[in-house]
Image (cartoon, rainbow over all chains, first blue to last red; front, side, top):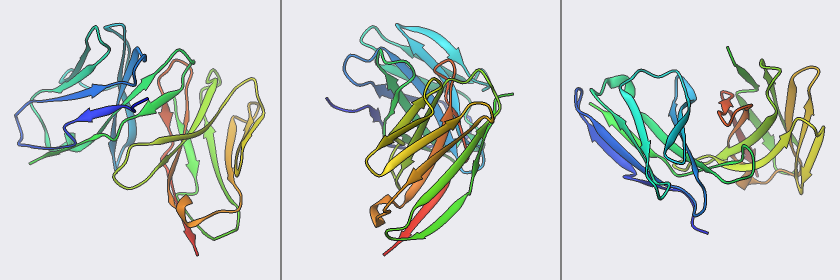
Amino acid sequence: KAGVTQTPRYLIKTRGQQVTLSCSPISGHRSVSWYQQTPGQGLQFLFEYFSETQRNKGNFPGRFSGRQFSNSRSEMNVSTLELGDSALYLCASKDSTPDTQYFGPGTRLTVL
Amino acid sequence: GENVEQHPSTLSVQEGDSAVIKCTYSDSASNYFPWYKQELGKGPQLIIDIRSNVGEKKDQRIAVTLNKTAKHFSLHITETQPEDSAVYFCAASKTDKLIFGTGTRLQVFP
């Protein structure tokens, strides 16, 4: 099976703009989670979607939002970008096996 | 809140030696403990995981041990090879939300 794919792989934005990142899970996986990775804060959970519904949420401001489509593909949106939003954004998908998550390569977002 | 501490932050070993990375978690309700390997420019790759009803699990050169009473779990890599060089992350979970440790940069010298 193909792995988790994320697009785009690299993105440069300026402060105040908004951005949308996309994630396609492994075929058959219905759960998609998003994580932010930075040198200072490490890997932090953003949110999880299952069957188009947000099932779990981390401690991030409302500028971070997401959605999931009927084909399990997911998008993450960040509005009013700040310099501190520069990070590697990782998507992980999960099958029916409890908890086992498989990560994509990430989208590297740079905010100038 | 939920927290996972990971030590050491860097680890250098000679090829063929063993490497041990240790993690401690705070939430006693955590029941799933995966380990991920992250190479430069790539996403984390699951290398082994253990659930709270098991004390030890082994997969070739990699093993993980879990002490629920002490809330400790450890990754053991034997016969290290240069391709084992990467950053390793432990994580703990109870509800599909992974709480990650801060990572260990492992360098294996030939």
